[in-house]
Length: 168
Image (cartoon, rainbow, N blue to C red; front, side, top):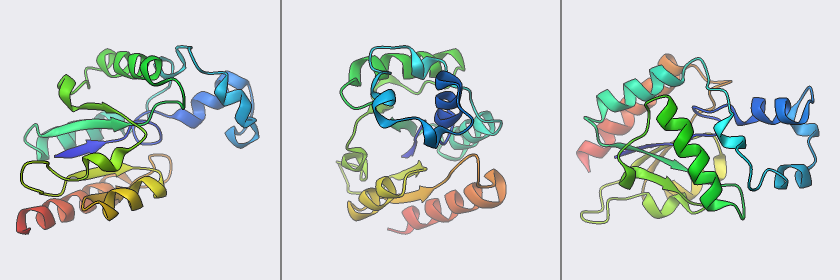
């Protein structure tokens, strides 16, 4: 199973913050302002990256349909975040089967297949998520859509990870 994170991987969370708070760089948005996003449609308004469609199509193809979304909600806003993230995916026709749409602050709980222990793959931009995923027996690939090359970086690492999974 290949899981794709949303924010920073296919949805431009930081560009969304800049637009929402009318700032030149997301790092100047106070943390308490981000908490004000609770109960709003913020996740439904995020722009996608130029590479997002190619990433999703590639993952669908190489996984033979065994893929999903594993994304974190805004703290204290799980149901609302999930609703708007799902709508965002549905609008782009990227919504996986519902049982493979995971909204959790504990992504690492999905690091392995619960039936046979096979490692799952996670594509995520946050180093702490990758570390927790790897520590639980999964294969994490750090990818930031605004910094990393899709084909020369991510696709190569995905192929390596799939080869690694098939030999375990």
